[in-house]
Image (cartoon, rainbow, N blue to C red; front, top):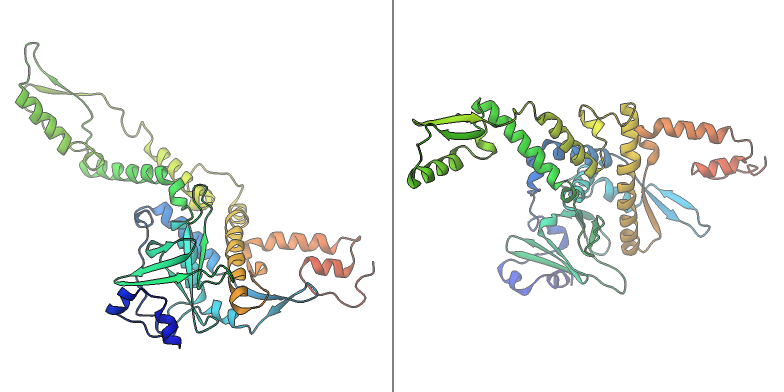
Length: 382
């Protein structure tokens, strides 16, 4: 029965080539290699922004809460989801899994979690966004010659694929990547780096005007076209910047350019780096960019990163996982992250505890409720 159910998930054409046995044996179906946007490989600012955010978010422990009839949340230690999030599959631990999930959401604006198992999930895998086609009716994942299509049951809202995406003002299906907002800044940063490298390699800068000596001298059409073609192919573009210009008899070079150091390329590069960091929600100060002192110290910058970027990101992942898992496991569950384990918030947490402790107008149970502790007997009196 299980094999028949799995077979119905695939196109008939793909089954003629290769058939898939059971859900637990899906390793041959997945491509283990990752394909990421070229900006992640080529731009150090993009690479660093994604790594800082994804690695920091991936190391926050997850907790499982279950709502009771009294509208209280009980922390569950031995729930199957708890172990599932700690070890999603045989190839990844929890930190690696969530690091890749967050990086995918940052780079592509979308991430797809696939639940594997007979009935409830016993394994979770990430589907690469570039290979997933999403619609309102189904998700389709393509791998080599095989196609996996999973329909969305609108009656129960059940689907084995969880789609977490960024907000997109122009579309309902796919999210928008942070790379889109930083596209021009990334290009400027890349071209500035390439320009400076070319100047160092070539050691000169042929930017100006070619002047023919003699009042009665002129170039024939053939000479003019040959010279124009030579300048275009050998001396134009950032890869040829600084290459020495070889002149024939009768031609003189007049420098008309501004020297690169006068144009302050480093400042324009830093400005582009700041814009890239802001697109990802990372305080530029954490990247060591000179001239950026938005926060008085690094501790404030790290606190801003957590409060303005990472915690909202984890909240969104938490809400999506809670809704998805509650439907499949048939329980009213809350999958949350342990905020008390975040070291960047320790100073702020200590200050809040001191304020609560010194509040004379609150009962003990009211104070305990503010820090998610259960009430105690006799704690309702002032």
